[in-house]
Image (cartoon, rainbow, N blue to C red; front, side):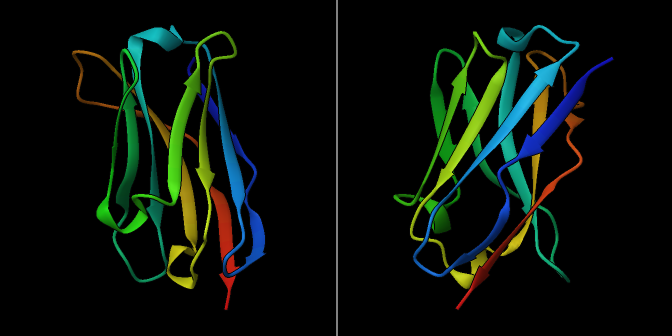
Amino acid sequence: QVQLVESGGGLVQAGGSLNLSCVATGMIFRGHEMGWYRQAPGHQRELVATIQRPDATNYIDSVKGRFTISRDNTKSTVYLQMNSLKSEDTAVYYCYARPYGHTTPHWGQGTQVTVSS
């Protein structure tokens, strides 16, 4: 059974940094596209960043230059380094894993990120 467990969220002041982690178990990590979504209150879930093999990354425009997604295949872990955080980054951040060649992803339970202005 696939499990994705996020950690690293919390409360931070605007301009600060957080590093989210997502550890995957029960799956072949290298065989999955990994990424992060977020959902703020009253908003739809939006895709923040993805990382595909070999290490191609994509970001939404609002986080480019501030967030960095990376993965460690030896630890089955994907990271999201978030710098220069803004109040509008406040949301629940969800890790996902999508098997290559499939459309249905697995989801983590989410971790809350709150940025105070």
